[in-house]
Length: 243
Image (cartoon, helix red, strand yellow):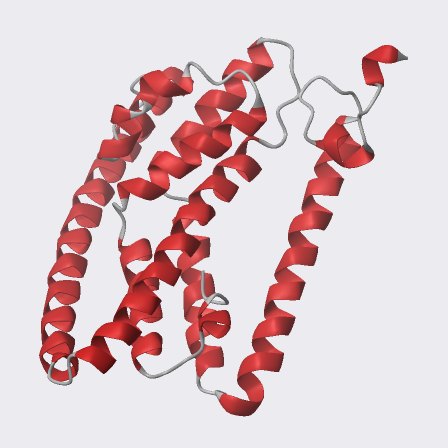
């Protein structure tokens, strides 16, 4: 009895040692679905009257997040920690949840900071709007072209791996994990840190570090949306809908 003292139903969901695996998984899904419904309700109520065109921008930001969730660095980090904790006879159903929470903390904080800075600079430096818009668009375009080239190279490596499988060459789970670990700078840099994670909630701090890495077009695009809309005078609470 003393062992479970102070453990509420919510904390039990995120406790790696507690039983009831199916209940924990369902609880996390319910929490995530409820949060998504709440976010879209707020977006619809906030944008539909005053800024109806921004509903499309909100959908774009949402798809950015969906695409970013399957980034190879993220998948590899979450998968490695989950496997490690399972080998320790734990039930780590919330590893990805805490990683995403930590990553989102950085993205939201950066979005707020950039929105405030963009609004201030536009009002303080009248000529910055036209020059800054040209420079920002050029830099963003070059960055996205660079990401496109990198993605093409990654696609080529995936295609080569697929051809090996078709030819009957050995390509087991260990080889696949090594392949995923090689994707992206952050995955290689933070790999030793992942070995220190012994509880799901500690992945929050790993997510923070990945967010600070600022290494994907998704984050650049989302922060760019925040800066542009802040420059147009969109209030900060509405900007917070995007991240």
